[in-house]
Length: 282
Image 1: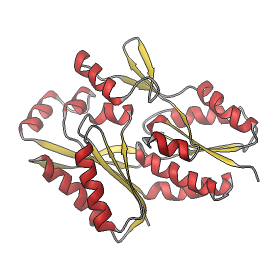
Image 2: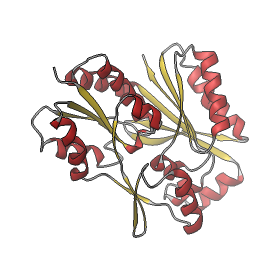
Image 3: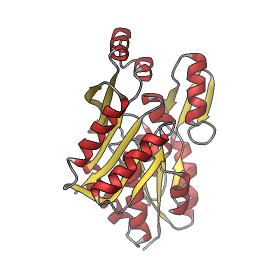
Image 4: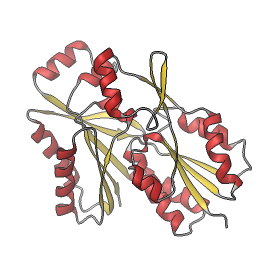
């Protein structure tokens, strides 16, 4: 049985240390400001993205890696005798998975298995990490594909958004909605459902109230969640994310609560101050 290497794209939002520790390959998406194109996580990071948005007043566009990008990433591993399981950004949001599949079709049949995560950010990352741990246990590519296909529909991903500006700039709010929402201090909770982002609820008032609601939503499900791995993800909201992490450690019995930072894709949609919680239901 061939050894298995796990691949994903740059929207997975796991830390560089976790990616390196588990030998996870990453194919970057592209972030474009006008004529300038950058590789997400390689030469474009959230801090630089936010500075460019503040300066130019517009959000960047994002683009999937090309089939050639994927082929260039996959070929060396296959050449070393490895099988590949690739887990990518939801096909409802991007052509990333489609392009990975086109690249896989150029390699010997069965050597690259492409899985649509139906998710984004560490909603992908938690699946990638689960797959990497299974690979380290000696599971085959087929077994890992089956494992991820099973858990992907049980991944819960929710974010509290601190500012409406990025939703407005991204065309998801009208100027009136942005004005009224900002005036009333409305902070949305966004969830991922069937691979797409939806508005789950609106919290009016202080940021602490919104964070508490995010926490209570998770704690209400504590008897149903898989407590092996929980992830708290944030964009320039380290102290709040640490608070959420400590609360989850104290009240869920989770064996591991990871803290990660969002990459450019989720940052460009949600903006600074975003905090998210990701877990898998039993």
